[in-house]
Amino acid sequence: YMKRELEKHIKGVNFNGDPEGRSLYTVLSVSFPKTEKSEMLLFNLDINHICASGGSACTSGADAGSHVIRAINNNPNQVTVRFSFSKHNTTSEIDQTVQLLTTLI
Image (cartoon, rainbow, N blue to C red; front, side):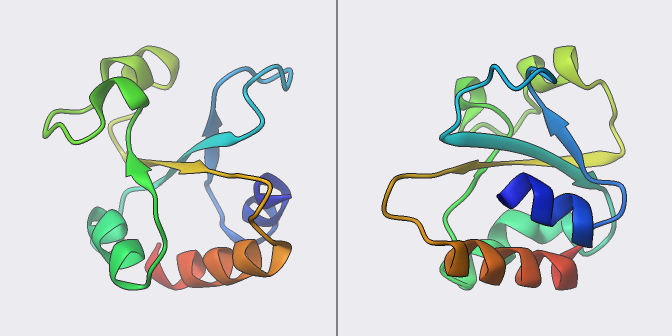
């Protein structure tokens, strides 16, 4: 659901992982166009009470970019964010997140 909503509302969004949909369904790695606003994306999501991580799980918390993301999508003009989901997340939460992202990109 989130992937479809992001495609609908954010121009230039890209998804990292298996394009055939064989990726883990509870994790969505998204690359957004790099802008002055998107450079602060993780910080702005956090202050709006939305939990997300940068890059890949291999480099979570690291200052350097993810070697995994570079191998999958070697575009330095993008900011990558990883969203994780559980059975407790709602479509309303996803809608709120996508709405916020449209203002932060």
